[in-house]
Image (cartoon, rainbow, N blue to C red; front, side):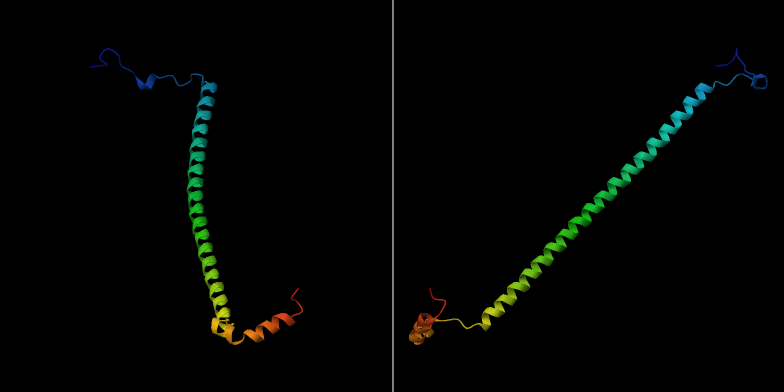
Length: 113
């Protein structure tokens, strides 16, 4: 066996040796540093995930704004089209029919400079 010539009696171990405070302090510092590194890593990972979600929400919000602007443009275009339909347009037949009246109207206009 491995320990044939060497046996340790656990009841005769001297426990009154001096404890090296420096080694214990260094070990505690190392443990605290590891704990701080783990906590910082978790915080960074969580923050990065939240930032990704924020960017997705921001992209969705921009898409909704763009769609709303398109809808507003369509509504404005439809209103403009309806207004133009109400205004009678001067066609060629009307121009020839009312040519004399139109020319007098333009000649008598105050704003005709």
